[in-house]
Image (cartoon, rainbow, N blue to C red; front, top):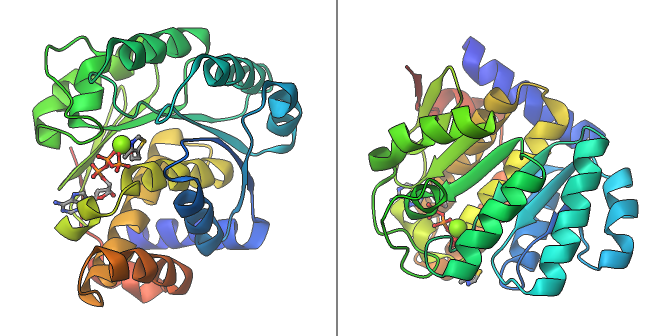
Length: 268
Ligand SMILES: Nc1ncnc2c1ncn2[C@@H]1O[C@H](COP(=O)(O)OP(=O)(O)OP(=O)(O)O)[C@@H](O)[C@H]1O
Ligand SMILES: Cc1ncsc1CCO
Ligand SMILES: [Mg+2]
């Protein structure tokens, strides 16, 4: 087994052994999908968005996912509280700016929250990442209108500005830090036909943050596992419905040799 595959496998084993609690404030559309994906990976998910309990829950959790997919003012207040608490406790925050760029409310909320507490990792599609950086590119609802490689330099600017790791998902995934860029070419086009695969990627990134203190490496490992499980699932599927099921099974049954045989990870 090569060294890279070995380190990814070690993180996966750590998740399966320690079952880190991942606190998700995420959208109604994907709650079930991302909770199941975290369980299949080996982590322990909890969905909690009431203002009255988020501080307590962050206390218990190993990492916090903030996903703005179905937003309202109450949720923003809870996100604010949770992020503030996570920052105070030095716990990883993984932020998903779903639909940033589509409406002013989403774009402005994203910027406001990013200024309350800088996340450890921001994961979005190309349109969402562009929107955070004030690029004049529209988001078509929650789907990207452009390829991930077009915003890599924008992501570098954001990584420097917020001093965090930026993940741009798409046909090729890019993990961008202040110093490094990792490129993952695993995955399958059918993944974009299942809602919330991006949100699932964000949740998996959180689980890897819980076991690997290098945020950029942890995010890279998560995206590799996401892509490898996605392509194994796609090979067994006839459409989005079966992909959704097969993805969970692929994640759950993932073996060291799947990583060795399939990993398409390069760095610049
Ligand atoms: N054409 C493709 N080829 C390979 N993998 C893909 C492709 N499109 C998406 N993926 C994979 O699907 C996952 C979701 O990425 P995507 O960019 O579609 O997220 P998203 O737009 O935020 O989705 P959502 O908002 O529905 O959660 C990532 O792991 C990505 O690598
Ligand atoms: C479809 C959709 N709309 C708001 S959140 C969400 C899930 C995918 O991002
Ligand atoms: Mg998304």
